[in-house]
Image 1 (spheres, one colour):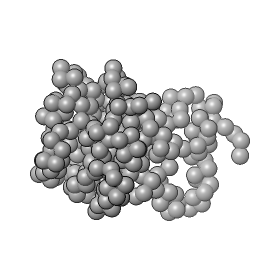
Image 2 (cartoon, one colour):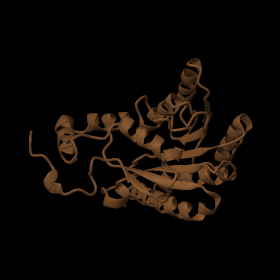
Image 3 (cartoon, rainbow, N blue to C red):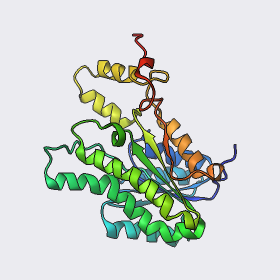
Length: 265
């Protein structure tokens, strides 16, 4: 199926994670569809990602940015528009489960909010004039923690709850401009960061096996490719009448009956 993304300027925040991360997978899937991936991230890893795409003949831009800094976010949008003249899609993909719980300081809690939800607001705020021109759309990457809680991560939970609230608010606010706003909700996705965490946990392999068994569909984690494929469909005009929606890509983790969980070792 042609998703009609060829030549679209798609801005992806949090897109310079480790190879195999959700953001990095999304930008490569975008490139496969002929879109122009624009990476916005504070990590200099993005330089290499953009250069790798350019060597393949794929137009791409990396703007190194502290996504919590309003001036840097405004500057990032200015650089994007200076080069391309427009923005067609914004994908907010920043997310760090930083463990800012009830024992965190005020500053730690606020920093979690700035990173995990305020950055979403900033990117959309500054990109909005160009989204209005293109009748583009917004996709926010969310987390099941907003709905289920997790324990010990008040900042991240509050932020991801805010992400879902903003998704619906923007869908209402921007409907008059023909701009769609949706969110993907992820539960357990096996990313490089997840793998790094498992290595720090005592008896990590047993913990990983237990987590996999808790996922009703296939007793396995979601892959980053599955997240990316759903992302591309939602931002495309093949999903042109979908707005204000929370799309769960998580193997039934949040909603399905726990009786479905396999007891097979």
